[in-house]
Image (cartoon, rainbow, N blue to C red; front, side, top):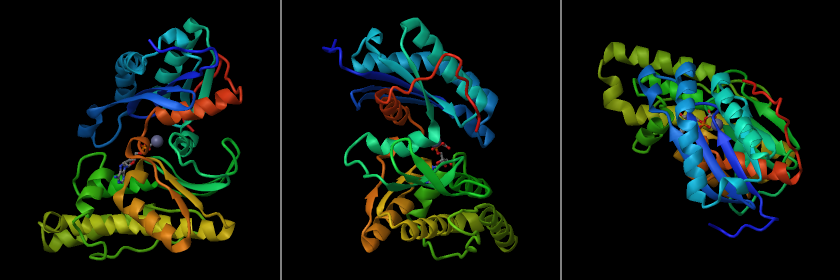
Amino acid sequence: MQEVSKSTINILAIESSCDDTAAAILQNGKILCNLVASQKIHEKWGGVVPELASRAHQQNIIPVVDAAIKQSGIDKKEISAIAFTTSPGLIGSLIVGTSFAKSLALGLNIPIIEVNHMQAHILSHFIDEPFPKFPFMCLTVSGGHTSITKMNNYFDFEVIGKTTDDAAGEAFDKAAKILDLPYPGGPLIDEYAKNGNPKAFQFPTPNVPNLDFSFSGLKTAYLYFVRDKIIDDEHFIKNNLNDICASIQFSIIQHLMKKLIKASEETGIKEIAIAGGVSANTGLRKAIETEGQLRNWKTYIPKFEYCTDNAAMIAITGYHKFLAQDFADQSVSPSAR
Ligand code: KG4
Ligand code: ZN
């Protein structure tokens, strides 16, 4: 067992907003353990089935939290507070994490900290140095959200652009479905795109004002494009998969980058971060680096394990809330939005 002084802050963090049951232990700002149990059950349904997700969280949550505590080497009596996601997400999934966290905290007689999942994606940049300097801008791209946020401080932020319809991750996943690829298709499109020509096929640039995004037109364009091509050649997808994926990926990245560049020009901010599941995309990571060099940006690209849903990001957010003594009471309840 580790030596724990009175000033040691140990945060147990729990993330259960969608289809990953995750737990992490953080000690004084450093992650000791970060575990995730991904739910394979949704693959055959082509998307996350909320009822199945809640049931799987129910099964996974105790083993995952137990393993995280054991692997971190601390005793559960040394946990200072429990941080957990209360929004946004699937309500049934959030209820499992929230109920478990509240009960455990009550049993251990320790405070609870509520965490917003999207804020946590952004604050994942404070897990490992170098940390972004405030004010910085973050392009957050996940399966349910796409936004540009100006971060003035840990908890003082402004959303200066957001999607008016689908999220970037949804565009990847829906494109993959059109190509008959399994769910979640984003990482597969990324894989095939590595060997394809991004200029092989052209898709329209979404026309949306200000710093906002729109992906629904692109999704329809992919659908009609594939439908028309397979009329002439039923093997079109199979024979051109790399080029199709590279071109689809290129169209999504172009739209994201155009708005991010505009946001940097309008605000004068050159500290630029990306976060969320889609920030794992190879093409987007490269585009940020290339534009960054060109425009003198200081860029922050998360480690792969902190891109998709994880509890380490909940832990670091919980830690900063702990330092600010921002605790929730036992009546806190989750919300889908
Ligand atoms: O942040 P996340 O794990 O969950 C949400 O909060 O939604 O993001 C999941 C999304 C999915 O749409 C998935 O297809 C996408 O992130 N994604 C990717 C890649 N890895 C995950 N999209 C493109 N390329 C990737 N490498
Ligand atoms: Zn997420």
